[in-house]
Length: 147
Image (cartoon, rainbow, N blue to C red; front, side, top):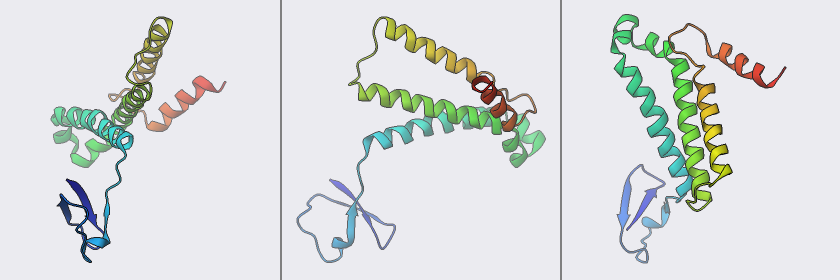
């Protein structure tokens, strides 16, 4: 069974046989299969957006106190944190997939764990309970690499 996307309309159709193309179905094109892109998108959505939504709605008192849009603005730093978390997990999955699911061993494993711990320490600097903006955090991270 293949999914097809009709160019003229937003309707999806399924077809078990590809040879019986009619004049109507010749205007359809196959949805491109890009498993790495799908994996990355699914991971960023689940780990990043899911994490953000969970924490945002968990703190419903803030939403009631500030209002919905102001609470979203107040959580902008946590949104950056959740996005960075989702992207880093997706990159990790893609790297593992590129290596054929072989995990690093020995000194490489220790180095990989150290890099992950260091990365989470850097992400831990982002604090949603302060009034610092994203620009403040960006200049802080920039000052770590540029003297």
